[in-house]
Length: 172
Image 1 (tube, rainbow, N blue to C red):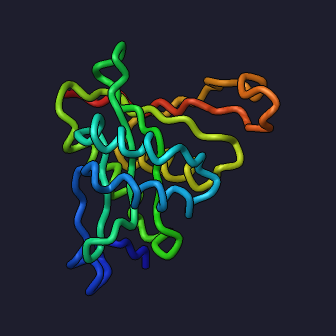
Image 2 (tube, rainbow, N blue to C red):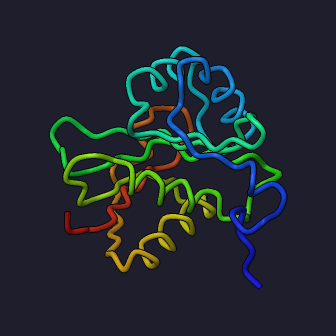
């Protein structure tokens, strides 16, 4: 049987999905730190995301504790696109479909003419690849994949290339 976080009891009864608040910045920073291979950004960056991009981001809480988050924004030149920057799920809750629940929540809550969802994923991040390709299949949407940033764009950091996943289109 394919169990999801939303099917679990009693944890599911206390699961809430909501917009992040500036006060969530430190907890979001700590969650991402616990979720390699995600790139950990400065605490200030997460505070700004919670302040400036709350309407296009989501945090998942159980009993008031942040256990998952998606940071996203609408690119200025693509008003019909939600760009998902990071998806973080606490290690203890992985495999429970929390990432999918948060993506669905964002798709339903994002205002405006959302036709596309984009993200970048490095080749070794198999969990994110599965999350987004399965989400596209569940939504009966296309999913194209192309290199957005080659590895050499990251200089001597050793960072892998970042592939752009473009899911959609959806009709308004």
